[in-house]
Image 1 (cartoon, rainbow, N blue to C red):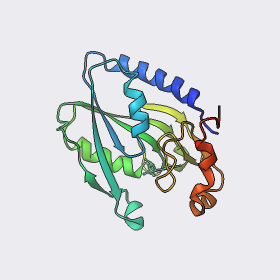
Image 2: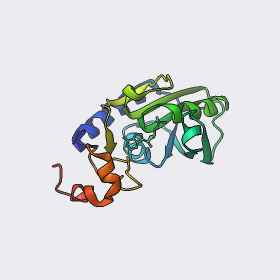
Image 3: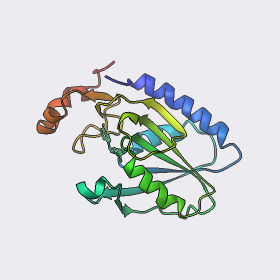
Image 4: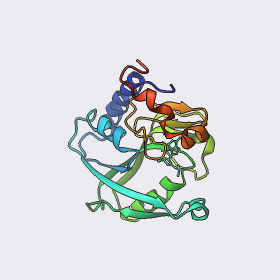
Length: 188
Ligand code: IMP
């Protein structure tokens, strides 16, 4: 276990307090990128007692070659115009940063009043695209992680804790390998 549910809860409380202080008197729009960021978003917004709105985007990369250029396709765009709005992009993990840097350039072109990033995990060791991340939950070591919104092949987003997967190939080959961790008693 890399980050347990209690550590996550406490850190989100702190992030919420900081964001609340920074955005007092404003009405931020928190944008989550489907699907990984949704669990974090759901907990984070309940620690920000300000009038705020949420919106969602869904993106997919164009494939391996294009992915390395950070090109993504927008599968679902925002419902609302963000022109003149104070926008916070809420991410599960920033890895190479390629996806996020493309997304930020798209959002920036729409003229928000401000644009910041709040990520639960920052795996800066693998960063390719330089990014400034205003709010970071935890620095993440260079291991594949799963749980609390993060998936392997679509599974395990509902794990309350964040686990480091030592043998990613084994879990990809046997998707049931982490099932015991879904036991409500596991990790407590
Ligand atoms: P980036 O463009 O390389 O920064 O990719 C970021 C996205 O890849 C995240 O939003 C996640 O959806 C996914 N991702 C990166 N690392 C992990 C991981 O360790 N576990 C699960 N998903 C990951």
